[in-house]
Structure formats: C-alpha cells, structure tokens
Image 1 (cartoon, helix red, strand yellow):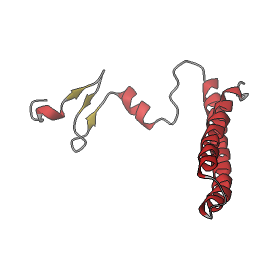
Image 2 (cartoon, helix red, strand yellow):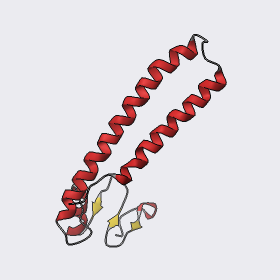
Image 3 (cartoon, helix red, strand yellow):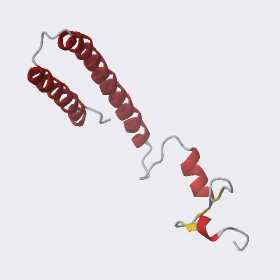
Image 4 (cartoon, helix red, strand yellow):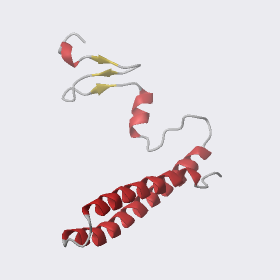
Length: 115
C-alpha cells in the first residue's frame, strides 16, 4: 500500500497488518480465526468437546491453586509477621507452596478428558 508509513508495514502469510490505528486487512479465514472461540486443527468435531472439558479442568485447577495459596498466606503471613517463624523456615515454606502449585497443575495431564 503506497500511502502507508514504511515502519507500519508488516507482512504475514495472507494478511497485511499495519499499525493499530490503521487496522488490519485479512482474508475470510483470518476473520474466522479471530472471532471463533475454538479453532479446530483437524476435521473432528469431537475436539470441541475435548477442548471444553480441558478448559473446565484447567479452571478447576486454577481455583484449587488459588484456594490453597489463600489458605497458606492467611495462616503463614501473620505467623511470620509476629516473629513466631524463623525466616529460613518461612522461605522454605514459601518455596514448598510454589512447588505444590506446580505439582497440582502438572496433575492436569492425568485428567481423564477423552470421549
């Protein structure tokens, strides 16, 4: 496009992307990708059910992690603030808290999501 600034030009596979103030000119498939909630990579509609189950399981894990982090912090921070907890032990407990969140999130791989 000759009327656009050179620093705003950027070529994608089949799209012309320009600065946010100018907008984006795309093909129909790109519009569908942007507006679709789920994009199927294969020709199997059952993947939609799998994606919904995966999103629900992920949301459940996020809520579990937030719950346990809230409990840990609501108990651990006052104990440490009043000086009843050695700083080394508090640091180790915080590391274990982070580790428990990681392990709980990794258990998502074991979830039964198949049809």
